[in-house]
Length: 515
Image 1 (cartoon, rainbow, N blue to C red):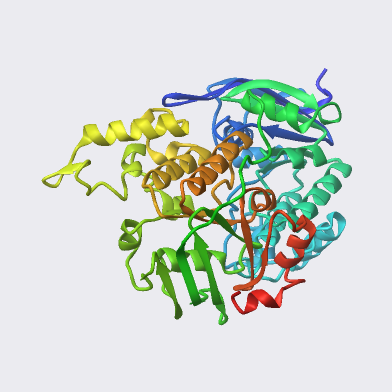
Image 2: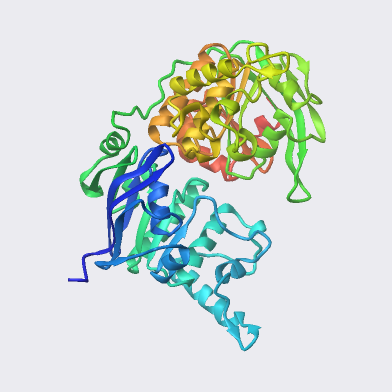
């Protein structure tokens, strides 16, 4: 019988890439009107599986059925014709277009030869009211928040009458408040009969929003569970294959001398007339983890760029081990003992078309251990890279000769962290070091940050993840609209209070004087 209880079935899907089976005989069955989570570590094959459903890849073997009938999905247009839509992890929006233009892109309504937007606008407004997706149709994408951009992507799917909605890690870039909103929106969509596939590795969100969850591990299908009958701990064990410690083990900090002293730093903004960083002063000492917390877009990125030499400041001073490095080049800062785990791993972390081993020595290839008379010692580089790959469990199809671009995001991240920590820096600047990583990798990286602290290094962490801020840091500095509005102690502050500072609803005047 054609009308099955499943709206979509992916049966025995296998997908092979050079050196790696991304999906190894995976079966996923989605019921109509349910929110179905797809859980797995980085590189477990979640995005690959969803890309097959959306027609971006073809399976090596296996079949897809919709309502019990086998279908072929050769490209995203086929997926759209089957009412399958996808919100990608990195949004596919045109920055200089309005929200409305992005929603109708590719299926513009015309009247005779003319574009007729009136009906389109009415439909978009009606949809946004129905599902609680408040967004201004005339705003330019470049002017709206990440959360609003995501709503635009969701409206794009609804405008195309998609019935099966794929969300690829939708909360990775959202603030805590936006995540609550998104969960509410997803529940509304399911209530209206939409069927949702939700790729994530955030267990709290699955427990809150999903009906069922399918777990993948290293490309293989582990099982499907009802959320009513499971726990966070059970899910994480299925996902990682062992028990995971959700609390960071660390002893109290014993800070000693100051490594980094920031004095009255001001950095201009590229987006608007105001300064992105305004008169910021603080210090970081050896043996402590200081965390800059805040909602995305409050000057953290510009601050880090000025600190690491990627951007210039208009005024202020950076003292590093007592030396003024305000004018030093990026390489000089790196050589003097500063390591940087960047926020944008593709733009500032890796050369994507280089191999893993070349990326591991990017900042050191000129040192005598890796070169002689201007020639790179390939053997030494390979041996060094293999050591780091083993130590940090960097998974890739072809080991040190894997091209960086072909690795999963989490493994790219581990490679950068391995390289930066291994430089043995005095100051480790870690920006969103666990963004997009799964619980097993997060646990490992947090323990590495604490280990650096305990070796007497200074660690400056910049994070948007509240759990990370509360768990890892010894001192919290909250950044709001380019200023430090509070210095908080993670042992005594509540998450609610931290949230108020981050939203700009609260500030302590003490911190304004740089105490």
